[in-house]
Image (cartoon, rainbow, N blue to C red; front, side):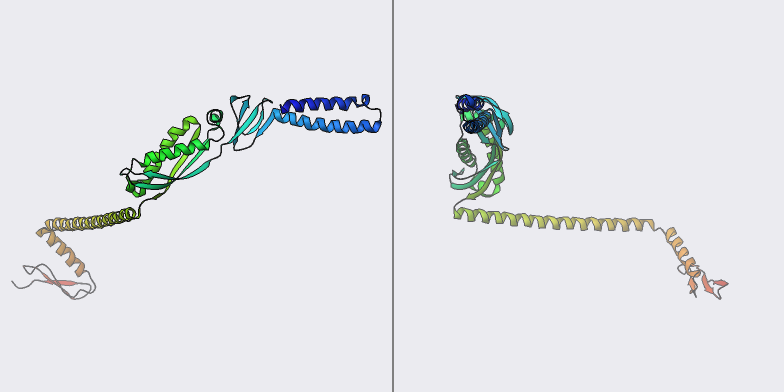
Length: 303
């Protein structure tokens, strides 16, 4: 309706602007009428064009609604030419962080208080469907399903699992269930987080004590395993040393020992500091007595 009024007012103003001489004869009056008519024509023309052209800001998506008929086309960020008689409803497609405090019941029937959050956004392609089926208060259905699914997931776990041991698993299942429930109606779930779990103080103390005992048990197992590995290492090292000694002993035959003795004696005889060299074990072994550095004499011991 505003487009029609603006268009008519603009046409009338233009007609008055060009035909004011027929209305009044006074020159000054003509100029005043022209100025007023021109201003009205400008304003109404701009208003009429604003109904034809719309700019969707970044982070938003628009939906055309013409007399209750919703267009299937989503108006993404940017400039669009639209039906001047249609209304455009805009939705934010930015990521939203919804936080809720929910009362839930664990698998064994204990009452728990859980602080959960969901990060979600509207699927731009499904904005017309959201507007048609849900309306502009779309967050209400997200909150409703979020609470219901959170209670359903928590009910499948014990209080200890939710509080400590399987919190991450609960968060992953919550996100997975929310995606399957919200994606068909136009919402993209990025992440669901189980931020805090409130349990009775007595149960909290018992859980923490048991977790502490488990940590100490794991630490003891680690120490014992490390000591066992060290004992195995020493045993292998000792066995290797014994095997080496055995191989060495087996290789030292009388002939080899005599050869090593001769080689050692030769080195002693060639030394500048040698005065007396005895060969062998006393059985028919010659005695080497160096007289000077140029010559030596071998003396055999009496039998």
